[in-house]
Each structure stands twice: as structure tokens, then as C-alpha cells.
Amino acid sequence: MRVRAPLGNADWQWMQALWKREWGGLTMVSRGTTHRLEHLSALIAVDDEDQYLGLITWSSSGAEAEVTSLNAVKENRGVGSALLDTCENDAYRQGIHRVWLITTNDNIRALAFYQKRGYRIEAVFPGAVDTARKEKPEIPVIAANGVPIHDEILLAKWLP
Ligand SMILES: CC(C)(COP(=O)(O)OP(=O)(O)OC[C@H]1O[C@@H](n2cnc3c(N)ncnc32)[C@H](O)[C@@H]1OP(=O)(O)O)[C@@H](O)C(=O)NCCC(=O)NCCS
Image (cartoon, rainbow, N blue to C red; front, side, top):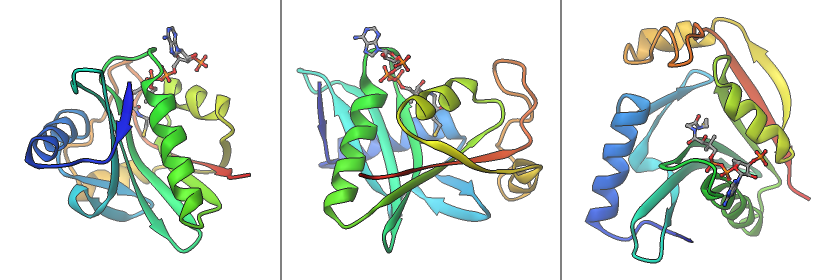
């Protein structure tokens, strides 16, 4: 597996298709901010034949970066870890010392994944997804695992 920057039109098409499929469109709403895919930093994971394995996007501001999305096409193969690790290293080289992200109350898998990788819960925003859904009605009401989606959870990690 390799992690690399997006290169050309084929990468861009794939990134758009993934966001539409996994996140309901080309925008992401977190903490009341609407992020557009084309404005974000991104890294792609590919296999030896350059087949797509995953995508991470983030937005930096001063000494902080927000991971706006992380997706592994096939899970439990180290794709999410490799993308997050490379993102953190790139961010650190650019002078970023704190990485944070928002996940939602239903996403038990992501909550475990990030906490095992050094992220700590810093805040819970009850009802924040219900508010974001007004801006982006594509956000589901109930997750695939049956949990109603209401709240944003902020996790953060200080880079050593
Ligand atoms: C959360 C998410 C990104 C994790 O990605 P992933 O590629 O499955 O993560 P990894 O494979 O790196 O790690 C998952 C587990 O697989 C294990 N693993 C890694 N490589 C492995 C391998 N070759 N064989 C077996 N297990 C392996 C890891 O040890 C890890 O276990 P741990 O968390 O107990 O340490 C992924 O589940 C996903 O895309 N979820 C949907 C979107 C989402 O919710 N994103 C996060 C919110 S922004």
C-alpha cells in the first residue's frame, strides 16, 4: 500500500464519487462550518496496482488541522491507520501541533479507532447533527447500525 497526494482527473472523479456515496455530497458540515471537498487537503491510499483503497481529507488553520473525512474502502487492512498517520506527519511538518475531528454519536467504530490512536474526547455537542441536517438534509437520521444520529463528538490529539 502507498499513500500519495491526488494527482489528476481520475483521482478527483474517484474522490467525488466516494464523498457522494459515503457522505451524501461534496460538502461536510462540522461545528457549523461547511467544508467543500475541492478546498480541502487530501491523501489517497492505493495498492500496488494503483487501485484506490481510501481517502483522508483535512483543513488546516494556524497550528491546528481538522480531519474532515477518513474512509477505508476495505476495512481492517491498515488503510485508515496509514492515512491518518501520514496526514499527522504531513501536518506536523507544516507546523501543526493539534489535530482534531468531529465524529457522530452513532459511529462506535470511529470512536474506538481514534481513541486507540491517541485521540481524546474533548467535547460533546448534543443535537449538533440535527442542526447540521438543516444545512445538509442528506445526513441520515438513523445510521446503518440502527443508532439515531443526533450529536457531534470532538476528538483531538496533540502531536508529539
Ligand atoms: C474508521 C475507519 C476509517 C478505519 O479504517 P480501517 O482501514 O478499517 O482501519 P485500520 O485497518 O487501519 O484499523 C482497524 C483495525 O484493523 C486492524 N488491522 C490493520 N491491518 C490489518 C491486517 N492486515 N489484518 C488484520 N487486521 C488489521 C488494526 O489493528 C485495527 O485494529 P485496532 O483498531 O483494534 O488497532 C473505517 O472503518 C471507515 O472507513 N469507516 C467509515 C467512515 C468513517 O466512519 N470514518 C471516520 C469518521 S470521519
